[in-house]
Amino acid sequence: MLIKNNIRLHKIVSGTWKYLVYSLLTCSVAYFINDLWLKDIFIYPSFIPTILGTALAFFIGFNNNQAYDRWWEARKIWGSLVNNSRTWTRQLLYFVHPAESIANSQFEEKRLRLIKRHIAFLYALKENLRTENKKEYESYLSQNEIEEINRHSNKHNAILSFQSKDLDELYQVNSIDGFKFMELNKMIVTFCDDMGKSERIKNTVFPTTYNYYSKAFIWIFIYSVTMTIGNAIGIWSIIFGTLVGYIFFTIQSIGQTLLNPFQDIRTGIPLSQITRTIEINLLEMLDEENIPEPIMSVDDEYIM
Image 1 (tube, rainbow, N blue to C red):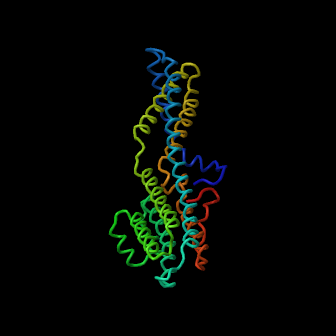
Image 2: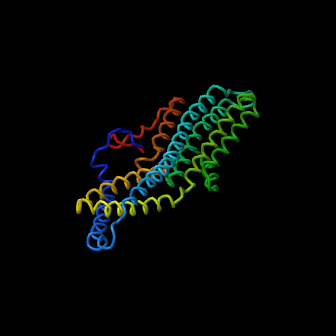
Image 3: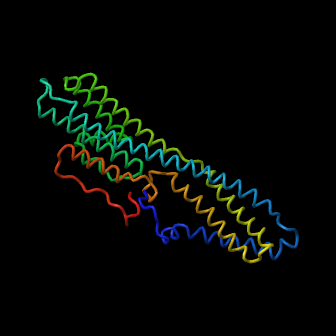
């Protein structure tokens, strides 16, 4: 995710120079076709780029709005996971108490496992959304849990099942009263909801026709612009047509970078940073000594 308001010019050029080249080539071809052949047959009508440009602006605007909605929804989901993770840990620390039917050491072990296993859930969800295979979640699971979870295709969902099982066991031995049990169980349901929402965004492919037709219409538009103004200003139409094409292609590409918010790219949601932040917060609440370092930004421009 970008964290700097001002981006260096060479960063912008390095990511969009190809659109400038494509536009220049297209406008050059359009101008010479019109100048050497087409203008002797008929004058290209000026109303075509006018109408097409207006329609194209609405089309790209709608595309970019939908892309941003996907990105912002993903950001809200993981913002919710941050807040609810802290609440989950706080409730386990202060809502759950030892009972006569369970040894203190066993109780503390189970409560600690519920908190650390949640960190494993977050890492497993992150790896699924980014199609990674780092298995960072295994450091917070026992060997038996790892073996059981590896039998499932949806590992983060399997981890939530372990959470429900342990929570129910604490309720059965009266370490949690009925009301507090419902509150903790509601947190698991919320985590499951956020998990499902994230998976929905990842697995729902944005209609490829939007991207295809957007690019096709931009080609036609800059071709029309160059041919239309070429009759008035000559070869300078290549420069102006290139500028128009570069602007439209760049705006369209901005929306494309937001379509898949969980990708490991500069404009994506910083899942690594968010997950590490939750991990640090939860370990600090447990008074752990070995706490990992925060994820640092790259050149103070973006964070993954």
